Image (tube, helix red, strand yellow):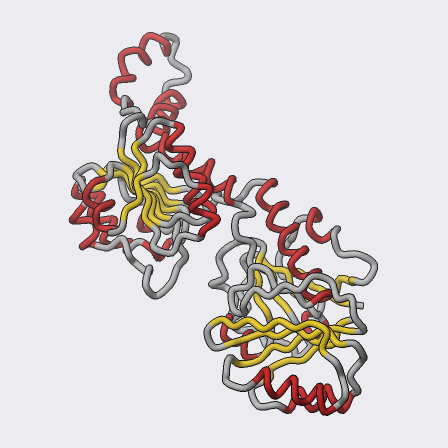
Length: 387
């Protein structure tokens, strides 16, 4: 019996996938798995029995990845599950920034009791006029699940689309429209585009990538959209650029008092993935990842361990080993099995940075002594026997 806990409200579309072998608990100290959205785990004590954490969403800044990896806890996220919801809001942001829809609606509300509202609107509408998106240059920084969807949708809006992503996946490249211009230098996007939207993770290398230097390269009257992470943009530099008219509109999904007070900023209350469909999709993917890992030892979409899949075990049992990525680990494992007269029917080893993961399908069950010997090997972080 596996136990799981939810640190946030998680859609039943996901939790309903847990079958009879799973039980929900409110106490993380007895949980094998955690499902989480926005709650912070950085100050939490992680119990020894915890095997996995699944973030129902893409960002994992609220989870201590290194700490989890050192305890053999695999952290999953759900890339692409909420991509369509974010894409649609980015498209809305493009329209809100190009046409002063918000100002126009506010004017109507302020004049709603006027008897001649229709006539007055015809005279006042020029104050809210804008431009069309067709033919404008859109630069997309980051061509992951969301960036690809935004790029393809913008092509269908007849925008001229430029995409920058030095690490684009093969899958992402296949999904990308052939009409998109591939840019090798992000500075070309800064210099050439009328609209710029950011879709990269928050890393040391991307923090405040939209800073004063980047803004100074951009066209006067550029529109910038940020539905990825607030800290990708230097807020002070952005406020200065808005006040100076360098940036016409900044559409951001991360409200702060400073940016909310700044003219030209369109500040949305973090609605990017806040659709029922996105929450359902993320919950389903997170649950599927946890179930496959706990039952079969397979890893899909981990952020601190390598993806490693070997299907369903057809042998007597499967051993899953979380360990450091150091020399001769596989040799020590196989030697130990050989000395115990245990035949390995199938095996797989993958590594990611400082950590690695190994699966062994064995033709007979190892004894407790063998399992204890595996755990004592220097560099082994966790050993599980499945089936």
